Image (cartoon, rainbow, N blue to C red; front, top):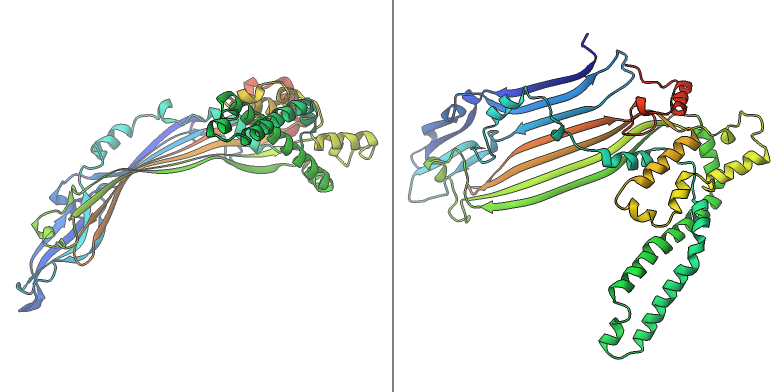
Length: 452
C-alpha cells in the first residue's frame, strides 16, 4: 500500500525511429520500361540520428487517499508535453510533372518530418524535467474564481430579490430625474440647427458617464428585479414544489466559469526546414504551382474553468414532515424565502452604496452571498471541485507544392495542463481547520466529514 499523502509521478514515452520508414524515392522509365523501379532510395530516421526521440512527457502531482473504496478526492495537477516534430506527415504519392521530352519520371512515396523548427531538443528537455517535481509557478491560480464558481454552483432558494428592490426603491426618483434631464437635453439639442448645438449638451464626458451609470446600475437592475418578481409570482407553485423536493436532498451540480479558445497566426514564410528535402524531392515540385513551400506558424490556446459539487440545504419551513408545516407562519416564511425578502448580510451588502463598484474588481459580493447561504440555508457540499484545463499549442503547417497534389504537413508541440482544487463543505479556499464550530457541527450532523 502506498503511503498516504502527496505523491509525484512522471513518465516519458520514447520512440526509436532508427528503422522507421519515412519514404521511398525512385525512377520510372515511362517509355521503355514503365513497370520497372530504378535507382530506389529509402529515407529512414537513421539518416538523421541513431538516438531515440521523446514523443511525450507526463508529470503528475496528486495525493494518495484512504481506500479502496475511495470516498474523497484531493488536489491534482497533471502536465503533459507532446512533441510532434518528427512525426511523419503529408504522406502520399508524388511524382515529377509530365515531360514529353524525357523518359524519366521521378516518384516519391512517403511523407515528411520537421527538423528543429519547434525549438530546443525535446529529448534533453524530457530527460531533464522527468525527475523535477511540479513547481508552484506551473500550477494554475484559480483563487480568483473560487467565490464566483461556488456562488453559481450552490442551489439558490430565492427566485427574486424583493428585499434589495425595496431598499433601492428610494433611488427611483433620482433615476427618473436623471433620465428626464437627459431626454430634455436631447430635445433642446434637436431644436438647434448646427452640429455643435446638437452634440454639446449631450456628449460631454461627465453627462455621458452619468447616463451610463444611471442605465447600467439603476434601470437595468430595477427592470431585472421587476421581471424576477413577476416570474416568481407566475410560477410560485412550481418553485415551491422544486424547493420542497430538493430540501435535505443531495443535488449534483456543474457550472462552467470560463471557456476561451484563441488562435494567433505568428507568421508565414516560403521556406521549409524538413526532411527529406534533397534533389529527388525537388524533381517532384510542380513549377506551375507558385512557391515551392509555404509555412505558417500558429499559436493556439484553449482554457476552461468549471466547478462541480454535490450540495444539500435544509430549511425547516419547507419540510412537510414537520408539525406546523401548514401554519400561517411557515407559509409566510416560505414566501419570504422564495421572494428573497429575508434580510441577511448579503442583502445589507447589496444595498450599501457603491458596493457594485467593488464587485467589478473583487469577489467580495460573492463571498458575502455565499456566507449568507451557509448561515441561513444550512448549505453544505458533500464534495466540491474547482477545475481547469489549459492547452497551449505551437503548430507549424507546411504546404509543399508537389505534383500532382500538394503535400500538407502539420507538426506541433502541445502543453496540456489539467488542474483540480478541492473545496471544503463550505466553499473553496477553506481548510477544515478554518471552519467555525457551527459549520463543523453541521458537517458532523450530516455525516460528511472527510476521512483520509
